[in-house]
Image (tube, rainbow, N blue to C red; front, side):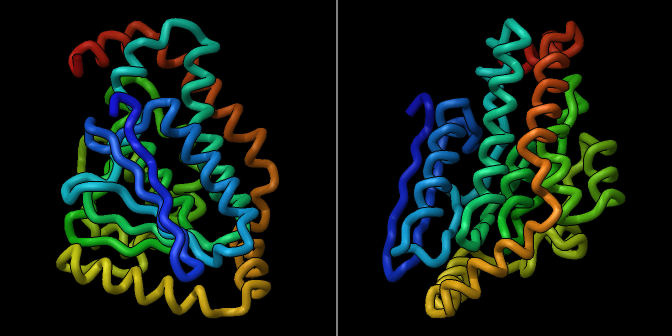
Length: 250
């Protein structure tokens, strides 16, 4: 469990990916790699019409990058490779031929907000507050910025990125376009996610695939763009400011 877990269940043309990590569903490199591979595999699976992305537990959807792994980074190459993990996941979600529904039951920080933004449609509970806290540890939400800005706009992204210590509640996120609907309970959330997925799974596969392409038009440069952003973070994570900030999380 040190690297977390990832399971996929396929039923009635619906693939449900569920990830977990004991540290608030955060992502070490290996788990990022497995998630990237899973999206690539499901993209080519003709038995799958729609994908649901969810995490285990009730309190936290995703705490972003693994702090233990961030602390251990000692070279620019290691840093760039680590942040490329998030770049690869976002690009895999972008290039996936299937629509991805995000099921967000709890809080999301940093890379977790990036994952939500890279989903094609997100449903959440009232507990699904969001925060981009990267500036507080001397880096920034550079890799995920294109995905977040595409979803909620530059003004809302700036608000999140600059006010790095403040949680924005689920209704703020809905107002900005990150979530389509917000529910009071996880039970209500799951009922709606299942209902939506079942409807989508019965639609014309060619229409779904064409819609996916249209939703992600003008992002063809993201392979290069996100790698460039990963290099920015890979350099900053070696700074004395960041090293000192990360020690507090040990």
